[in-house]
Length: 157
Image (cartoon, rainbow, N blue to C red; front, side):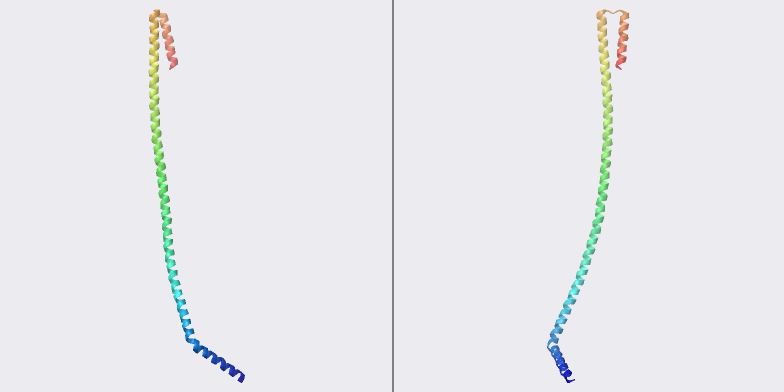
């Protein structure tokens, strides 16, 4: 037993000496380490809260951007519909104007053709009358020329 008591006393004395000489610095180091860990945890909590706030702001901005995107798309669609309607209206007006001009041109052409026909008839009548006067035609020949002239007029119409 003696062999156990002396080594036990030596071990106890060693621990006591270690505790006596290293106790205060070890306690100070543990206290500083605990304090720095707590400060780190506090900073981490602050950083987490800050990050969450920033995340909430970003999400709010993205929500606003999504809504703004939808508004821009809707405005673009409305502007496109308005432009298409304007183009269609302009096309209708242009078509109506072109149809009116076509009718006016057709009337003018018909009037020109009538005038030319009247001029041609008058010229032929004058030519025929001049020939009759020169030849002093008899009534039978005169009637045949009239029939021929009427026939030619009917064919031209």
